[in-house]
Image: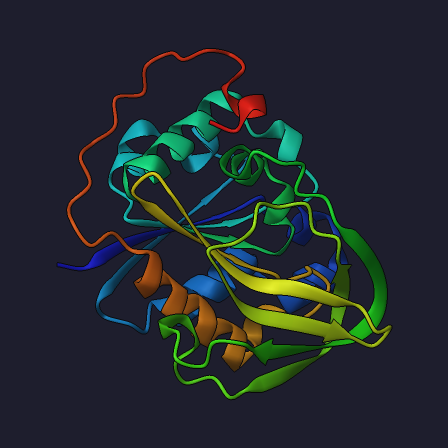
Length: 243
């Protein structure tokens, strides 16, 4: 049975910034989707912020095995009830791949229970990603390091819980380092956070980046069927509490 993957993207930068639109004329979500669609064992769909229910209806979420999430300038526009819907599905066993500035999404912060804040700089830094666990399934087919010639810098301190595994560390032109590939388990769900992907760079056309995302989809996918989640009401403080 094919693994059902939903790629979620704000899809705002591509509509507002000509440089981003040139790099990703159909959106960052479609750049990732086009690569994953080459894999016949995956069924790929996309969803964006401005669709009804952000494209994440109860039926869509309950049919998703793995969700890939990219957000940046509109985290606050994502409705809490949709965040809760996805959050509960992760706890039930759905896999989640969080990309780049998705670290500051309501969803990731709720799953981590921390601010998820970090240092950052936009200055055309080169980023070298170093493999720290070469035997990890997410890194199969990737050399011991690779370099992105232009990226936004993220630097420590990254305010997150200690990861289950740190499998990639980045170094930048300015000397900063960052935990760029990390894994977690929340409830029955596996989570992979992957740092690269600033919108003004062609990162989602890079073969290594796409390979890691594809591998991550396989690694986070549920190993047993997920029971549909009943999305009932819950205490309004659930997001701040990180539950």
